Image (cartoon, rainbow, N blue to C red; front, side):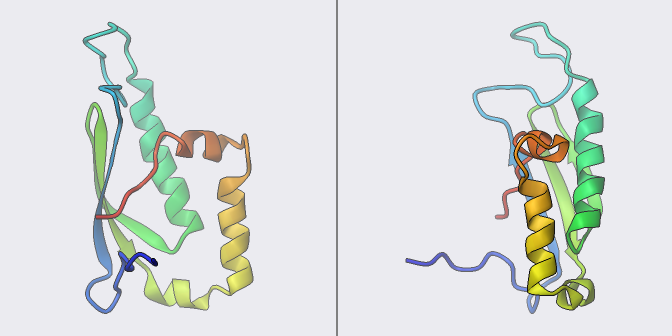
Length: 115
């Protein structure tokens, strides 16, 4: 059975997305269980959001990076998206999914899930 679409641009071009870590793993900050500090990861998240907004037809309106999850408010740039050919969409998708690329390695940690 096919899933129903999550995005309806007729309803709204704005989407609040949440990504979280599993098994009490820390995304950034000090992990009180292990004592390790992962402060450098917050910059990764912010950098990754900027990269993805350039590749895909979306703008980042707001974001918040917590210790084990993040929130992002995205605006779908409808006019820009409609100008992209199927070939261009596939090309951009392949760039993001190239194994062992810097962006793909980081994207394994930063999967955006839509409500």
